[in-house]
Length: 289
Ligand code: ATR
Image (cartoon, rainbow, N blue to C red; front, side, top):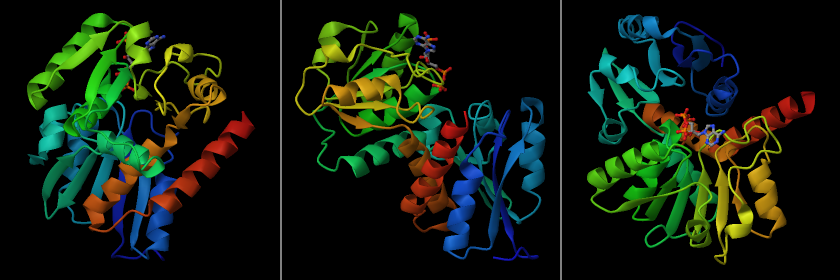
């Protein structure tokens, strides 16, 4: 699409943000769906975030933004409305600008859940025993999405107090028990139907594994990692070598983006195209290193 005076602006705000792959993903979909829009990366320091939001509200050229580190937790205070799910998380990764009004959403947790459901359509959340390593921001979003779907959840984290805090928060919001366990707790891992690594262990460290896959014992267990650099982390390689089903981290990025697209344009984000673009770029970067 040629850029003209009707072109709408979308983008991702972060600090830093130049490494982001969202512009490639979203612009490819705009081109494919013939949407007159462009998606850019905006490095914005934390103390200028409010100015950016308020400035963008003065024009209907800005249609929406995504937020990444460190803005997800700060942005809600600048918005006019927050969707209930983002309200629970106290974090927003997608904003829709609508005739001078801003609405905040969170598509991180649902992005993870959708990526799992697409890869393993036979997986049933109610009654599943989900074990999640980590208790940071990503864990909060994923933990909420998993609990919302009726799965049992156990949180394990290096700092036990943070696991307890997250479990208590999720229990009080969803009215069901959320358990905690020590990292690498043998019995907890043995009972897992789905394991999710949300810690940064393995990020740019191909030989670092957050837990021992030898403890998993359930038939059909799915082992997933939200780390996607490298594409095949130590955890995923070891799980696959032991014959377990695996789910790589890049899918969450695709589906949080596809859902943001749907919020902005009211039509599906073409996750297949987004996946192709993202995988090609991640592989290119991996080979360059
Ligand atoms: P994100 O927003 O990506 O979730 P975060 O909020 O900084 O990032 O959370 C990082 C998570 O990785 C935390 O659960 C952290 O554990 P602590 O709460 O103990 O800090 C976990 N983590 C980071 N480095 C780790 C390591 N070397 N071993 C185990 N856990 C680690």
